[in-house]
Image 1 (cartoon, helix red, strand yellow):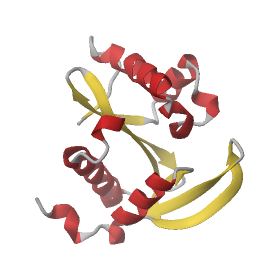
Image 2 (cartoon, helix red, strand yellow; image 1 turned 60 degrees about the vertical axis):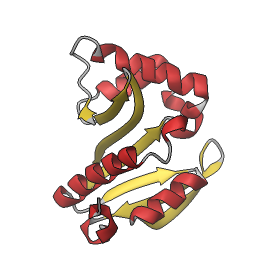
Image 3 (cartoon, helix red, strand yellow; image 1 turned 90 degrees about the vertical axis):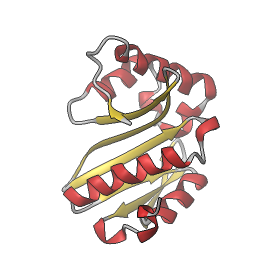
Length: 159
């Protein structure tokens, strides 16, 4: 996994290719709010200096992406994993490492989702549900979760 910086040759094209993958697969609908569904809005979102984008690349394609942005005194984290890589232990480990790094530096990491499968994953790794906002995401209830360093589970460090 590496931090995406769009000013390096081939890496510049990766963001566009990922956007195309998200729109073709339909994942963009559940992963990003409708305000980020156009290429221009998507690009602006990730070119903002406060958004950190970390990607996992296999065979010159993004198979997983994790992004962070400041949120109050902590950070918000988001994630997308290509369908054929969901359940991959290496990708999961990359996510846990990023989460542990954030939790070691910040008092809280927050995540939001409308997806039940993501909700189960967040609870599994130690997030705690802290609220829900009805009709916040295209009429669906947005669930909010929080994580801090006290939530890091020992199983994370087993190889």
